Structures are given as structure tokens and as C-alpha cells.
Image 1 (cartoon, one colour):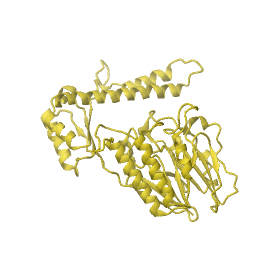
Image 2 (cartoon, one colour):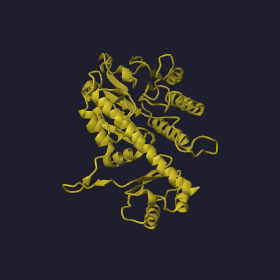
Image 3 (tube, one colour):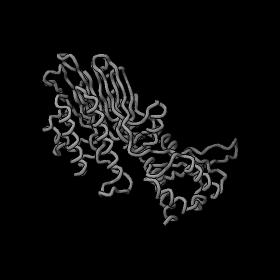
Image 4 (cartoon, helix red, strand yellow):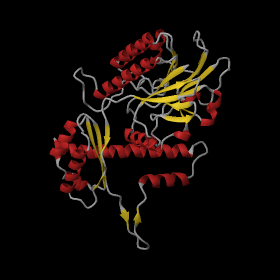
Length: 401
């Protein structure tokens, strides 16, 4: 008995301003293409079970083209694999905030896809397949009410859920990660299941011999560069899907090639460099890479004073932005050093460090969660830093126009 596990499709995801000839956001089209390639691969593997671990769409109310594409592809999946069990659990991006609003995933039930969108559901009627699947949506409200157990009446018992395990949450997500169902790893009771299919974490990750985060099929998170670093550290080729044999325990990760590359160019240390020297280093970084045309590109320049930034060659930067789908010049100003009347010079504490220190020591009323307050404050600071980066880009853009 073999299964294929997909997660975090994020259909309808939009990014940047480039459109296809048909008027669709280019990144939305990229994600749609990755989904089709993932289903092509799934069909070719001919599994007995297909598991979809949430965040099918990027928003609760996706665009009509995204809905139509999803319906057509899931209908094709059902037609190509008529005897397979197909089960879907909603992710936090799929779940409406109000109970009165219906979940779009119900649209796929008439196709013969088992959908859990509001509550945990145990599906165990799969004809000749001796199988039960507990499907748990990624709703934070379910964390105190869901028991991750099965009745043991079937030979194969699978847990399918969209959730966050704090033990494996990557540091680069910080406090900006969108709320989802969160539990401890030990509460999964991994040894009691034939397989555990998880979604929410966008990098493929094994947490037990029979438990996996499938990872997303495209770079649709707020920090693709953190994902790239982690994928490199884990020796992963990128995004893909999981194949698992329930009888032998053998598993394989299948890479799904992206429509375009995310290229993180080597950073430039700009301290003590002139604008002309930085322009030359930028050009060298671009020339040394395999090619930026139609790719998503980031170049980090550290210790770049604002007055030097204003003197960078606008014509060259405009050319790079024309060639790439997106060329992000991530400029970071120098750290401010303090000199004290006594003692050696030192680094001034960052604003985030000062905020954390003040909130950790401040008197609070008993009904306030201190850690939640600190996390929220740091989240707001991250948003301000992003705004400042966008402002720096706009300053450069003014020079390009």
C-alpha cells in the first residue's frame, strides 16, 4: 500500500507586478504550473492514497482562475486515479475566520475527495482499502479539543493534519508565522500511526520514521531565502512531494522543478567602499551567477550608508530589474557604535534588544501573557524594518525613474 503526500499548494498566491500574456500574475501562474507538475508526478506514481495536508489556497477567497484551475486539476486526479483514496485537510490559509463563512474546499467533495475543513474527522470507508484517516484542519481553536488517536479497527491508520510543532519551527520565521494548530511532537503519538502527513512547514522535513512535513511545492512564504538556506543545509534539491510505502516503511522525496529560480547572490560588504566600487561589485555578482533573466533575485549589501546608496548607478540597477522577474536590492545600514567615557567602545543595543529587555522587566497585570506580548512587539518591529527596506528601494527607484 503506497501513498503520496502533498502540502502547502498555496494556489492563487500573487507576488510582484509582472503579468502573463493572459493577464494573470506571473507568480500565480508559476504556482499553478508547479501544482500541475506535482499532480502529473503523483499520477505517474499510481499511489493507493493521496494526502493533501492543507493550505490548498493562499487565501480564504481565492481568485476565480485559481479556483477553476484547482477544480480542473483535482477532477483530473480523480479521473486518472479512480480507485485511490484522496483526503484533504484544510490549512490555516483555507479556514474562514467566521463560522458563517463556508470553506472553499467543500467544492471538491463532489469529486470524491474527503475533506475535513472545520473539525477533525475520521474517514474509514474506502471500499476494499483497509484504511482509516484522521484528518485534522489547521485551526488553532482545535488545539485543546483534539486527541491524536485512532480506534485501531483498520490495518493502516493515518494522521493527516496542518499544524505547527514548536520543536521544529525554523528560527527565520520569527514571530511572524501565521497562527495555526500547534501541538507538541510527543502528542502526535507517532508510533501508533502507520503514517503521519503534516503541512504548514514549507521545507520538507522528517520528524519520525513514519512522520513528515511534505513541504510546499513552490516558494510562497514570507521568507523564501530562509527556506533556501535550510534546504541547502538539509541537502534537499528544493520543493517536492513525498512517496511512502506503508508495508515496507520505505520513503522517497520527489523533486518538483520550479518555473524559475530564486537566486540569493553573494552579499557585498560595503564598509569603506565608494559608490563606484559598490557598482562594480554589484555588476560582478550579477555576471558571476548563472543568469538573472526572468528569475527572482536578491542581493544583500551590508553596511551601506544612505548617502552612498543614493549615488549608486541607477541605469545599471534599472537594467537588472528589467531582466529579472524581481531584483531585490536589500540594503542594510551600518550598526551604530557608541563610545563611552569609561571602557572600550561597544555595539549599541538594537531596538529589538531594548524592547525585549524592557518588556521582560516591566510590571504587567496578571491577565497579560508576557511572552505573547514580547513576541507581538518584535513582530511589529520586523514589519517596521521591512517598511524601511521598502523605503530604501523606493529611494533607489526614484533615481531610476
